[in-house]
Image 1 (tube, helix red, strand yellow):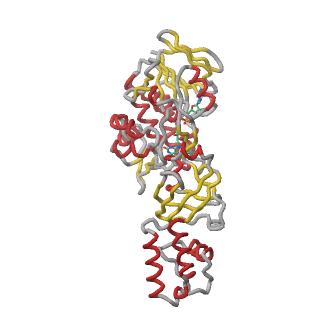
Image 2 (cartoon, rainbow, N blue to C red; image 1 turned 135 degrees about the horizontal axis):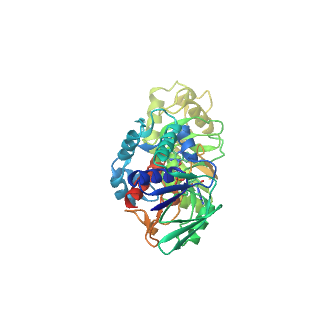
Image 3 (cartoon, rainbow, N blue to C red; image 1 turned 90 degrees about the horizontal axis):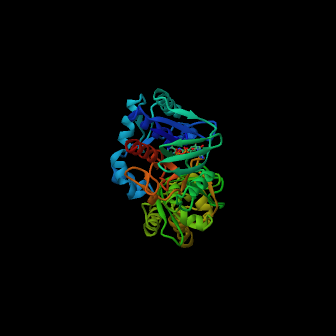
Length: 399
Ligand SMILES: Cc1cc2nc3c(=O)[nH]c(=O)nc-3n(C[C@H](O)[C@H](O)[C@H](O)COP(=O)(O)OP(=O)(O)OC[C@H]3O[C@@H](n4cnc5c(N)ncnc54)[C@H](O)[C@@H]3O)c2cc1C
């Protein structure tokens, strides 16, 4: 049995290794168009590789996949995050979970994962062909003809794990696979606004951000950056709203509540009661709601509260403005930026093309798909890699 895996990334390597481990008599090769393997694994998680997540219940995991979601339930039942950490342990890699449940190799170095995969690939005599991009895929009777930049190869089984490469999407479309529209996911919002200018690094433990005129709203930590707003609340919005925001060409307004635990009327009552009990304190010196001092100073200034104004002299107009700015500040987003260069694509080969129990194409027997090439993507947290590992495992069982 000759198996060709196209793509030497996370999904391709993991699938190839598991196929070779389970089927020692199969001849397994990886074709990689570039001169390097596992490039995204190398830079992932800021060079530490957020390899998976501590959450393990399929019902919990599926909530982190805007594309895929509940359809992935049985996939995670078959091979979950716990199975991945056990797999790594069996292959000599210890992992650890951080407080937010993201998991990393204990070495905090992505090279550990790469070394593990390379060692396993060598052990099982997987052939690795670098600088050999696939340009055409054709089914000829029971076999697949793979045309590369160097040769034509015939294989009994083919696994496509080519990630988000537009040139390769064309190859797959020509082979007859249907794709969804492709748009970016996991990006941050560009906002030029005097209220947040030069406040980069200021963060809020829990804020809520709503896209005006849509149902898109998310809560979570929020970070002011050089170029606008970032942090989990924004990344979640960018993932869940990937298509809606692309349609708006990344120009829209957001409403930000910096004190998410409080409704505007509660914010007002708190300011009023503080005014009553501390009339002499200067507003600028006493940030309320545990807000970062630099942000509080900027907000009070923006709401026309002078440096000398004590709480006792806060006018109704000033309080109204503060309540509005803190509870639902309106900001104009003009464009997007990548988050620490960490981004994924929403969209890919339609999930209806594959049987999610095997990841084999429904219309093309012996053709399997794994990883980002499929219309599956997740929030940050190790979930994108987990989708690669789980699909790779299922394919290795099925071939
Ligand atoms: C900077 C960054 C950091 C990230 N950090 C994390 C993280 O910490 N945790 C997490 O879960 N996710 C992370 N992600 C997302 C994660 O890296 C991807 O979801 C994952 O790498 C997808 O794996 P893949 O194998 O499907 O695709 P890829 O890793 O992109 O691999 C595809 C491979 O196929 C090759 N290829 C493409 N076309 C062809 C062709 N025609 N012929 C032959 N080869 C071809 C490509 O050259 C590439 O090597 C990060 C992404 C980025 C960009």
